[in-house]
Length: 426
Image (cartoon, rainbow, N blue to C red; front, side, top):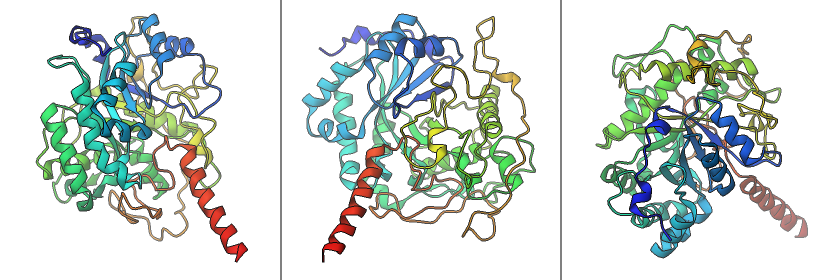
């Protein structure tokens, strides 16, 4: 039975007064019990939690702990075709998975579908969103907003930020989604990672720009605005792209952002000092309420990636090293998220952090380091051809979402091995 209209009439003020959220990834075999996670969250100033799929045990634990946490609840990519095909299936999903005991601020239908490489998912995104919206109680003022999460790869241009524009090839699927968000007052959700800016341009000044540390700033020749950090530049590139489409009034939610505290030998900047500097200074920047050069004073809900390390993720060491906390509930580094004695965050005390000496060598094949905000190359999103992208605004295709499932890469390797076997058999 779907929650009644009255069920949604909850006071979201205490859950939403904090604009800092965290992602809860589950590609791991050592995650703490749900009750322990609920207690940990209740001890912090984190006010929002993003789930990539329903987690009934954790939701129950959050309710029992009286944490005040609100949820950004995800519909797994694998469920999107079913929801798109059947309003009844969408209603059943809503009844089974939207909790009545914990506030849900929004539901993300899929994660980075438009740049997933699967064009069939892209065409099913809007119908799934429409069916799920129809499954919510009509007239419920506090009902969750229905949206979806995008990677920065939906942008064709972001350097300088004022030139921000979406890929023209995505218009057929993205434009109707933007209109859906506009009609229903839902936010545009995006996953920016300044870490990849530094990975593609390892100069000391780029590291300072990415970590919110003192730097000369970078001037946007198109707008005349000066940017002092990459996060604001990425966010304003998205705003410019929305403005160009006529949807400048949409709110933006940062659904993922983070910095790894450990990496392989070739992964520049993946250190505890840099991770602490990025996340700590980001929290302080958001807490200050200064906004961005394009939209001063406008706050943006931001979800840090991630609550815990995910020890089963494949790939480079950094993929398993984004956690704020270890599985034993101790912090990998401290950014002041613990509640003070008066119940307020101590994040404002982080200030400017001096990182470990940065690596200043360019990456192989990069040539001269870029002087602007971003360098973009590679295949258009939605292409099934996995071409390496190089960009200080985009996550490389090889990394994709920080939540990329192991099964996707296993499928790629299966295809490679199958091809080798066919060749050998000839």
